[in-house]
Length: 373
Image (cartoon, rainbow, N blue to C red; front, side, top):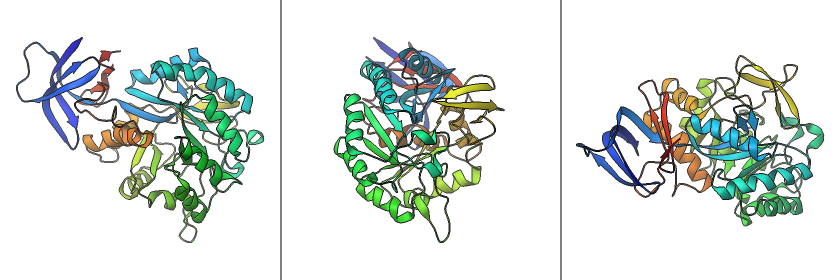
């Protein structure tokens, strides 16, 4: 089946150009400029950007990945897909090992199906001092055998582990991740600069939601934030929702991160839902005014963000150009996940994962694998 999209403003590389796209069997086969074929489907001169890639998301639309239930995972994915996320990694939270094994068992089937791009284990190998919305009693010191068991349970679909580098055996666990093709991320950590640098040298390539649940940056105690920003091997995640980070801090990271920035949602079940009370794994969360916190006014607990909103905020509040905004919402996370040959930009040969935006950068239509959703 072939499709031709015409009368579009296509955001590719470092430019926005008037043109058209030809799509066959779910892939982009031609990018045209100027006069378009007469028989194409007109997009009314709206913007076309690559599908968003969310490398850290727990749920949305009233459903979550941490339950490990396929029905909930499908619902969460469908919600974020409607907001332009065409590639998503399902993020779990700290839980007993037997629950993690059960959850992975169901999510693996959705990875095999091609719905999900992998599984992210956020916990239980994180710092009690910076655990955020993770239950402290369930935290564990890293164990290489446990890592290998969870990786094995994912049958090749374990995409990322978040680890606190200062914990015992953390560097061995990071090395085990790297040896098995799994991304090691540093996060939920009270590590010193030297401890974080040792983790990066051991193979960690992502900083989980930089600044949040992390030892703060000090002028005599630079900590993991400085280590991550200053190293070209590390992609730093940022939650651009107006709650987690001040706009000036996001600007600073965008200018400073040598390895690049990836916007993430870190969204939980409540994304797209009314204010109320929700679950994030074993923790109860209160959402008020769109901000998610542990019940009783505790720590920020994930977000209600969607990637289209992160994209708009990047342009409207952080001054990013449209190509720069696609870089932090699509290309950089795709690169961090090792998926950039398939997704992350509009290029001949890549999957036809596209988001059509109006002049206000609101989602008009979404295409995944060459099919409108």
